[in-house]
Length: 471
Image (cartoon, rainbow, N blue to C red):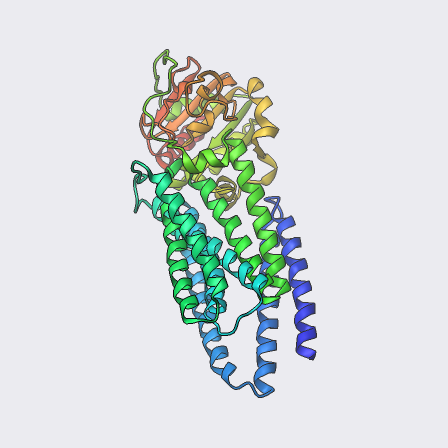
């Protein structure tokens, strides 16, 4: 009885820590402490669960002893592997890792549901129905996240589409739902177990089929959506198990993931339906608007000298910066500019990189102060009065076609107003297009010059050029 009371209190404490941690994660300056707080909450919840199980074992339920040993082994192996991989993962592989961890959470919820559905006895219909819904969402999150990981990691290079695909997916989903209903109705019978197995196979297959047609440009939104799915699945399974900590944690993660998904879709000026069911990224060219002007290139040293004598510079980081692992060199260059009296700021687009907050984490890793990093809405009006905009590895998020070309697939998407700066330098490996496949009109503007090369090498040249001025 005492253990049950401790379990209830620990669930309340864990839930409070989850919510407090999530609140702290809303700002880059406090995100680390928020992650630690949420982690402590998880430790409290897990420890309390083991306390209850140990109490049951001491009360004479010896069968649980083996389960406790297996759970401890799984905890050590899983925690050790996650710690090792998390400490070694490259910044460019961070989105893939997040996708996998999202999937594991959904898979854990589905595994809990599988145990419940394979049990004997009739069971409460409401609890079983909630269990099946959680199992469906968790299974979709598991396989969908694995496909998202494969796309981000280059294992799957192109979307897989065929005629009538939406109809086939709809049939698979409807059949899976019917199998889930039948599994609830026949729960506790041999037929119920068979139907539950078919239900899980259908749910896992639908997660794959739902994600395969989605283009790589939309993977950040998809990752966020599956994060919401995982939270919802965990919350539902928490209800089925009458576990307050699971319910609250799942609801917090689910609601936060849903809000983030909506905000990201809004930042792309697209509905979630469009993200999931359009062929975004399968276009060639920039729509109907003719590209005027030509690309001009300049040396890294000339661009650096111009920035050294500028009054203000806004830097726009993109995925290319992460690929080149040039964030440390970039910040070294920034400090040289600041020493020379240049006002330097960073502008972050909501969907820059390959996952929410990717660029913020990248800059934090290099030690860039939070007070010079600004979100799009807070800095966009500043570009018109800025001497130089430096774009490193970004593409679609600075493309003026989003404002002017109604036939462009990115039309209406809010962008960073880099083109309004007096001078724009774009650091880019070559003349390729972004994820959307749209030609970037910024690159052809009169006030824009391209600095071709790997960002690491370009930043090294820029640093040396500024240092030579002071020699």
